[in-house]
Length: 128
Image (cartoon, rainbow, N blue to C red):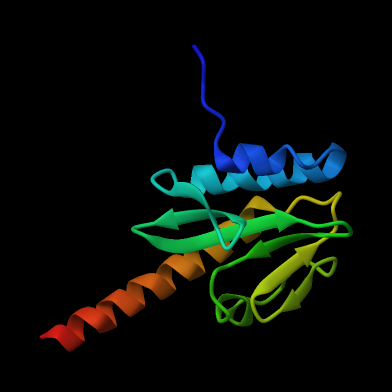
């Protein structure tokens, strides 16, 4: 049966070797952690959305790959990140030939989902 290539598949086709394997591993991890998510491009980045909210984005670049938690606060709340990662407010950069550990991605996703749930709870309380 013919399967249509998704926008994320098309983006991953831009990469080769270890970087592509690393990004595919990240995508597979996100698919397992977010089975009901919609895969799309947002701001040109492969993104997973749940309930219309961006939970995780990623992409590859010439000298590194990046994970974007779709919030500037998520990375600040995590400790014990791998020493081979570089962190800025909204970006976790990692070497093109390294895979982000599943446990780390799970923590990042959990933190972002908690943040989204808290914001929805606050929004709901204001409506009352």
